[in-house]
Image 1 (tube, helix red, strand yellow):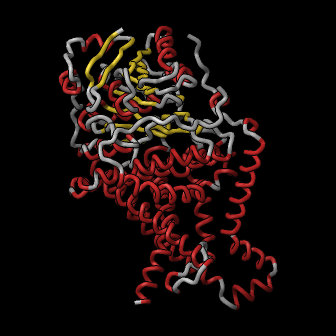
Image 2 (image 1 turned 60 degrees about the horizontal axis):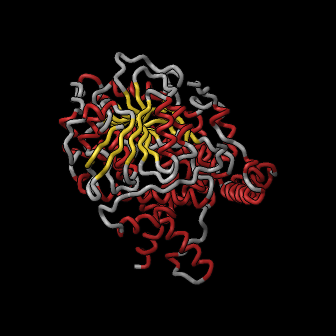
Image 3 (image 1 turned 90 degrees about the vertical axis):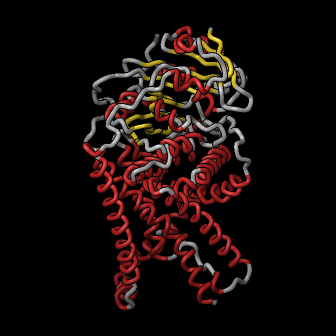
Length: 421
Length: 156
């Protein structure tokens, strides 16, 4: 009995330490395959391919209490190098001057239209209102604090025009604010995990999520999927799964750059990551039953990946707790964790982290020159990532299970870091 | 309209001096802590290098006591697992690519576009003004308090 217990303990501890190691290689292999298969031979960011036709595109910008930043977002957006587009800003019942600013901008810019929600409805409903009140079939949604690269629409539309299967395309979010340690760590994160993961998942066949901050949609795909869900904490993860379950292809376009503001405080980062973790768990639980269908088998790799990472978070937390107990009190031998980083395995894990960051940066440095100058800071990202991943997952899962079904998700003003405007 | 110049120097905000001195100190300490942690990870490698610098010790620890075998064994096992994972993943990807590429694409017809007929059920109101809304510069929209449906749209 003690032997069995000891063996289970050894397996769990092995899983806790080696899962990140092997997942890192899994992501790197998948991302490199994607890079050489789909990406390396394509043009530069400012040289998007010509399209056989240029259907009208609507940019949707949901806004809530964004008086300080929304004008900059809209002014940048209006510089798109795409022949036929309009911008719809949706003021979701803001209590500040956002509505007045948008109305003034609409007078100045012929391509801008404004939808005012009489009462606050949440981001999902704001996007849905915009989608319903535009004649265009193609929608590109960006957050109210994001600056979209001028060529992004052309790159995204290239996917829609090249395949009738494509229901959505997500772009490549790049961090704007890099003044603090948190900002710089996230520069690394968006290359070494977010970018790497999206490429790898495209190799498995399905994306876990689009980036809600920059995503393009075919309206018919959205319509079939039921638009954005009002009660999901992360409407972007949910809509991705709904589209993919409805057999639409969801793609990643690394050249569709979008410059975003991210939290630069620990509390801001924690709130954001907890919301992401809760949103991910919510989607997994909601769509769980559909995954039993053989026709959904292409969703299995990302489901397995998410479920395993959730299991890993709890295993890792248990391991750390047992290690801590072992320092304070006598614990049974089968449950003893003598060290958290054993010998040469620690070396290999450390080297793997460095390699993962380097691979991610190498791929993204095609689109942002001088990215390697952040390598000094980025090298620490994997450590921070795995710790925050454990904590948010452990907290998020029970919260989601206790959350009332159908409760509407609401806006929270995010931490946007140190901003100069 | 003044054209905005897309210049990364204007877009990227890299101004550490905007932080308070206290915050900068905390981040400095945090960074040093992370570096220490990383060095702890690489400690066995550092030991290996140190032994290498003193050849006699290396010979004793790694050759006589066959200490290198542990590292080689780990690299062998990990390498085999990574290789197997990579082969499975690339085979899966190539299989899917061959299956869905080109002539085998089952959705070859351009999908129908969404029009008023499709969206009408999402409005709990008369949609006779729909063409006006599509071009209006300014709209005020009201929603049902419980269901995600539009109950009124005012143009202008």
